[in-house]
Image: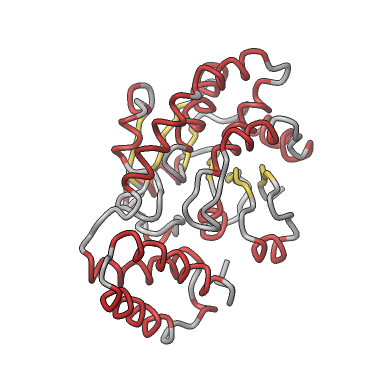
Length: 284
């Protein structure tokens, strides 16, 4: 999925927020922002995905500020806050009349933890609202049928904090289906996407294999991943891909199920989805 015109101000606003947080000198902020603008002026939007545009802007930031994790503190806080919710989330699944459905719902609710589009979220409010919703019956039945017939699952994570919600879904799937599960996280810092240290912090690696994808953008482009990830992807009978960036970059084929909240109005218009909608989607 190619970038929209509206991706440019969105990414610039994101970069300005980072500059305000990380750079005290106003002239240095302006210099870096001008470099980003010059970079963007050479990019043909029809040739890049939204995550690739973000990567170009953040590459300029790293050229000036070093190879930093610009959201390190936010990710650590998100992981801690999400872990504190685990007893409540486990109780929700345990008491559910449709445990698979609600485990999926909770995993999608976690996708609100995002410092990309909009950068505003209230996870407790989101949980209350999401648990009142229903996934598409057609897509849910498709997923249930696919998961029952699968032996290998590749689960592609999105954000830190969110991976706690992913862990609950993964635990449920392992306990109830005959699945060999591999979980993939990013290889280098990008926005607030989960890294291997986030997976270790929430102890995801204690019961499932965790690999790095090789991806350095907010999405996952199959021509830019490492061999370990590509092998896991090719061997998987079913793939769960979390978040908007993966939806924008991965192929829309029958073995991939996307779990996300639609957090971009322009993506919603382009895909006939609704802004704020919770989505379980696969090509049927």
